[in-house]
Image 1: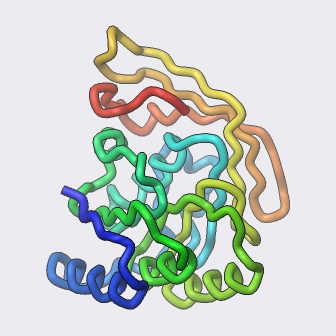
Image 2 (image 1 turned 135 degrees about the vertical axis):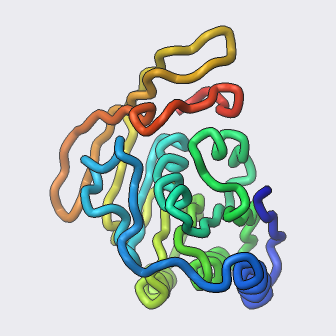
Length: 218
């Protein structure tokens, strides 16, 4: 099962995370680039770059798919500020729940909590706050680079390595509320390192998504 932590102080949260991970794993993951699912390798051929932030707009499925690549490869991951994040849906994507830390409400110290999580987790998925000061974003970016962690942000984020905007999606293989998706195609606008393009990805190419675990929607 995943670990659910309350919105304690950032220092306390970091200590709790370190204790859990050291007990179960003994050390942080590698600082090399983190893998993505095969269906996303065309979009991010080098994987997820340590120390970088990625902006995801319009799709929780895409966010889970990006989290699934590192998780399947053994990385510890965290989710913050997404109380509706479905762990059954996450398991359907192949995210390892025993290496997943949930912080439903980071409280008012959003950047400090995310920085504390990034200190000990390889990947953190978080909902973007309503406002973030440029100086706070810069400090968090420096922390990510120092710790070689990856930040996935649901919503806009300054100085993102890539922005992935979902404009449409198509499902196929759905039975009467059960079975496996044979197709889960997303239409994307992708801005990566100063260039932009449109692309289509089929998340089902990386393995069937179990519909008994997955809430329908983008």
